[in-house]
Length: 150
Image (cartoon, rainbow, N blue to C red; front, side, top):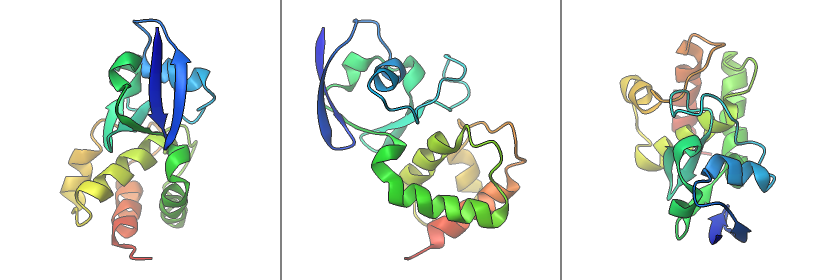
């Protein structure tokens, strides 16, 4: 079946199977920042934004995305770079596998609640697992990023 997708403000007309998940469609169309992890919506590494809300693309049917705005980290490069600088300053980055999904989720938080406190950050990020860090330095970097008015 053909679907028309708005990905990072570009229109893509793609053939997909009715049971194809957005993760696979994005990766098949060269959006390699979207990672594959658990295939059950448990780890968050496949997170993308649909209408600026984080969703697990590994369990979200591509056909459901038609008519919605899809954002991958390629669509928020300058924001991801700002967050990355804060993460580096805090020593919060290790292997980097979860970085694209984390950047998208933090960006969505910034759009929704730019004044988020540490507890609100923790709650918002509950679906994004990182196996390398203890999260404390990430939360500090995220608070710094949210407070960055540049």
